Image 1 (cartoon, rainbow, N blue to C red):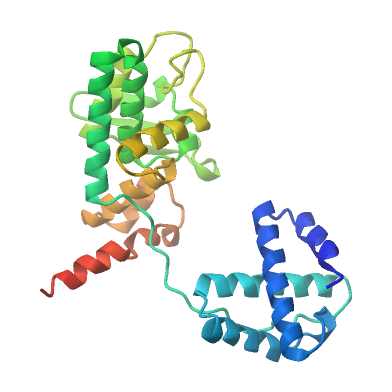
Image 2: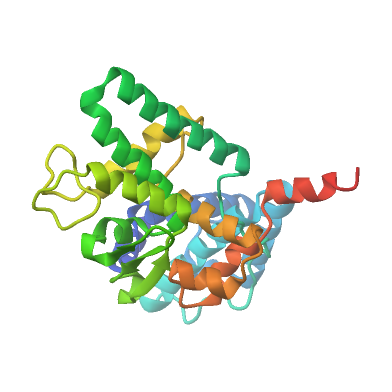
Amino acid sequence: MNHTTDFQSYLEGQDRAALTIRGYLADLKHFAGWFEQTNGEPLSPQVVTPTDIREYRQYLQVTERRKATTINRRLAAISAYLDWAVQTGQIEKNPRGKIKSVRQEEPAAQALDKKQQYALQRAIEKDLQIASLRYPKRKIGRRRDASLVIFLLNTGLRLSELLALQVGDVELSERKGRVLVRRGKGNRERSVPLNTEARQALQAWLAVRPQKDSKFIWTAVEDESESLTPRSVQRILKRLGQEAGIPDLHPHLARHTFAKNLVDSGVGLEKVARLLGHSNLNTTRIYITPNERDLELAVEKLN
């Protein structure tokens, strides 16, 4: 293939992510290898036919036994390559045409199961106890970390929303509370009620939070005038997650867990969408798609 560099420049001009570009180029290389071996001529846009694309899809499905996600990504790479050829006048139309992608199951949201949530809660409590007994200078920071993780799990806020919260955005009383998310995704404002767990966690942090110049709720203990950075929050979750045996714990997994807990408790999709700040119910439907554990529990009920 002589056009790889030009095709790469085309993808870069479309502001594609670097990872996507690398993946497309690798996928195109795979298609080029199959094409030359199958047809006895090198790949170029002018010689690709709809039959080639259908046969390649069949080859990936039957011979290589690839998953639907891999097949569809490779077909997308070929389509992008042929779109580039159309735009540069090498061919008149994209031969991919109406050749369909492989149907795949709706992906289920990744969320912590009950056992993992229990392990995380225990790791948080243990971390606080150890800090109180052995590392009194770290006690405030560890209290903040514990409250932050519990707060995320019980509000489902996005990381950017969490870090933007200011003291004036919170209403707290003994029996109820809420936070005002002023700039959610799409610059939409919403109010999120706080359950008992979230209220207690927030109150525990505010009770020891250094009272300096910062208007933000979640501050850096070392420099109280500064709000936490996204990287700091990611490190907090990663540390506590590792202690709980959950090495890939990250802010969005906490958000997914909040939503899945709501759905599993029988909360309607419309309410879940409002709490998460989704403008489209289809975005929320991922949480009612059964994951592998849900299906395992379903068949176990036959025993």
